[in-house]
Length: 631
Image (cartoon, rainbow, N blue to C red; front, side, top):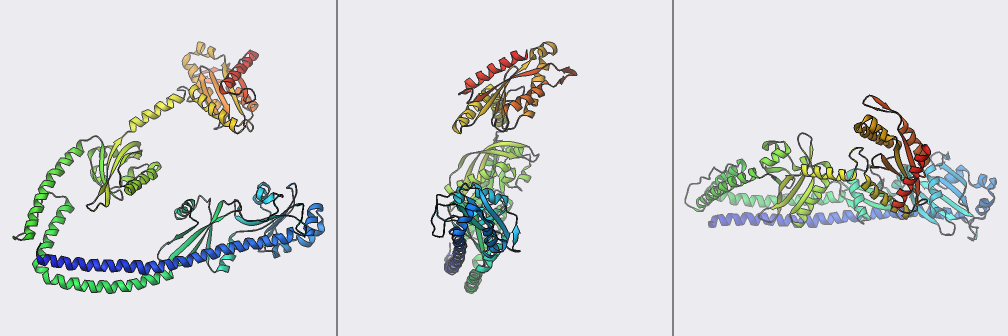
């Protein structure tokens, strides 16, 4: 490298580096300071909102104590006198307290009085059934032994509620408690608007369990799930927002509140940084232009010519082209070295291409976004696309939606740990719409600085292997004739159901079914007709049962059914429906078979047996008793 070239390069790099460092520091200092100030400001708004919510609940509790610790209320809970209601519990009294409802219950938990009011009109409103159900079922709102005031938020299906509950005592705050007084105000749109106007802030309130939230808000809920209590989100250059979690009286997260504000502080910082950047870049640009003009003809023109030729070779992938640069200086020798490198690269590329096109597994190289840059014939065959079509697509176009999240998570881990993915399996879909299974190994591609720039993947089509495995698993647990569970599968499910029922003190009912006169079907119409009749019996039984019930063919013409919820689906009803369904005539190959019926043995766990084997034996014996009775 010549001294002039070193001088120009040094000046250019020094100038660019200086500009970059100054801009980086300025950006960090100026925007960082303004950003911190902005976050402090919106955090203060969030704290102010939380304090106001606490104040609203405290006011509610204070109002509650005035009414619950009062001799008149104490007496009313006992005698239910109408004068108390007329004087104190009319619509205007409740509305003047800024309450939507008031509920009184006696010591047995029975609600002796309840009224709801529409605050906008001051008239009586219908009491939400969900609110009454919640009050009845909530131990925290109804227990009498705890004489403290319970206040906070509860979440109903339609809206949240600010609520407070306290035991009814006399004016001396002495008991025993004769009941419990519960008051509250709906935390609906009008209440949120009132609080927002009071704070002079823009508030949004979202349910924590709302599955219809936009993706951006779902990310916020995930942040809360990771333990954060407040999440600051810079939506764009104009708006900053903060979200904070609100828990109910049971300490469960039910709502999260959002505050958004204009980023006036941040925009002022950007404006200041912009002026400084323009000034700095202008000075640096003038210095670089003056220096470049002095050595343009001597060095830069020839250097640009060599650079254009190299870029053309790279862009078009024409490794047969060479760099032509006249002269005998360092640039000419550099051009000769580049040509030698291109010779070696051409040989290596042709060798690698032959290897890739002759392996049976698919191969591709992609950038970090998944855009396919290189592929081989096997991948084209797997995807049903030509090479040119593949090079215009993203590798995610072939991943089945069910496995997209798993693949992206594996890729992120590959980048974070800088380790290859030894095996990644999943489903892929091809141009024809067919779905297959793949098994892939992925390696990260880094540049000369060790920074990731893409991936190399070897992909094997394991669709046939996967299908065979699934078929074997299915055959191991299902009867090939009826498609029902076989004996092995039923015994495993029965063991699990009995273990579950034992743990939670539940019942299970086993039906043991045997077809009467089935041998006559085989003898008269043939075994094919018998097999078809068994399949039809299985279909009829499925129709009469629930999806949660377990049905299996134990062998021959014997079937078993496990009723998982006999309290709601009594065995007597089921057996009658099954007997009636099986007794209906069967039309097989133009012939009517109307003499087949069913004998059913019924046994209950744990009433009739304490283990799966004993339960089956008992049901089997009961079935034979029923068969003999039928004869």
